[in-house]
Every structure is written in structure tokens, then in C-alpha cells.
Image (tube, rainbow, N blue to C red; front, top):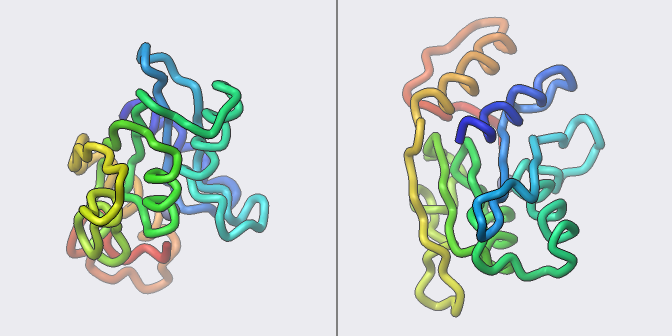
Length: 158
Ligand SMILES: [Zn+2]
């Protein structure tokens, strides 16, 4: 998660919401990294998880990421949850809960939906306060009129 947080720190200079992600191979080595670069590249699908999954698949030269673990600072959205299931990673570890758009147990639980034949293990809330604080301070800095933030990760547009 520390590596994912370091990735998240790379996002703000481009105006992107600071979310970071790493994919670990079966041996625990980092095979994919990504941060949210939606603004930087003008791509609505350029969430941290998507970028890291693409890099990991390139590293292993195939689309199946069996035995891999994806670590991300914010609970994945529906798009990323879908990509996570399709990539067949074994485990998803996330930091802050996204009660507005989370698809790993908050608003939806796409990743552990019993109707799907691949259901990665989900480990929520790892360094959740730290991951949420990164987002809170980013959004505080972007608000002309700061509104109270009720929970880590709340109030983000993503
Ligand atoms: Zn996403």
C-alpha cells in the first residue's frame, strides 16, 4: 500500500485525483504501477487500476493475472471492478472506502458477486485513513468554499 500511495502522489500535478495502484506478481514483485491520469491523457478509462492492470498484463505477456494481487488506495469503481474480475487477479487490497461509487463492497460488490465465476479475495481498509487523507486534502485544495468532509474518500468526483 505504501507503493500505491507513492503512485497516488504522482497524480496531482496534472490535476488528476490522487489514486495510486500497484499489481504484485505471484512472487510479490511489482509488475504493474499506475496512478489516475484521466486529465493527463484525456481518457475517461485511465483510472489507476486500469493503467496498472495494462502494465502488469504487458509484463507477463498475457491477459490473465492469475496469482497476482492488486493494491489500490481507493475502493475500485464499477469499471475497475469489472477489469479486476476479467484480469483474474487473486486478491484485491484497497485503502479508503468509496461510499459514493465503490464497487468492492460499498455501493456495489461487483468483485465478489456470486453470479460471476471468478471472485477475487477482497481485503478492504488497509491504511484507509492515510489513503483517505490524501484525497481529502486534494479536494480541500480544490474547493473555493471548503465543505466538511464526512468520511475518507467522500466527495470525490470519480
Ligand atoms: Zn475506477
